[in-house]
Image 1: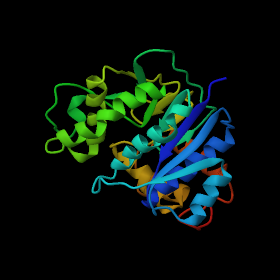
Image 2 (image 1 turned 180 degrees about the horizontal axis):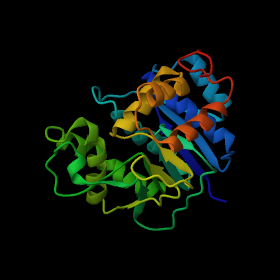
Image 3 (image 1 turned 90 degrees about the vertical axis):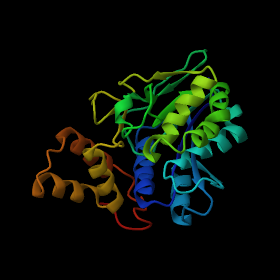
Length: 273
């Protein structure tokens, strides 16, 4: 049997933290026991209450210093420390952003080869007008064997620093990951939508639903997640403010929130929405 690791990251931002708590609760609900669960965070950025709850959800937690400040997405560079420390002890490593709803046991496999699975690609024109002559990969999901991980991670930060002046911060770490993979001769293959789907193209049978991104719906959902009163906030947006919001997405969020662990420490101690 393969020794498999699922890892996510978060920081002190309340939206990211609440998203992680909902994600962790979903993993528990669907019994993803084939995965060793790990959470990475910058030193001193999570409370003892949150860390204790995550450990009750079978997460191992790891804190590392974060040297790159001013970029909310740079927390993903903690993956370099993690893979260097213990990544080699696993046959496969799956990274997921915390802003996922878990809808089924996660079933994904990687055959031998010089590639990593990633999320769907982003067309070059979406990179806020950045001047690029290639599409770059969304890094909300990254999956593969530790050897391929290490090859890309070796130059990820170097590419990030190289493009710092001309790629907007919203896409910088993703573009850098794509460039690092090309430099390392590692192919990036978009994962099948039955594993992960998005607001831009919902597969109703997906195992994971990624509600993050740069669309107005993604920003609205994340704003509601940040309140800790998720369903109340979404209802207000849908009915009082009459946003043309996806009923399917609302239903999935309702299922996720209503089935979340009762002890979930929303906003470091608020009650369940």
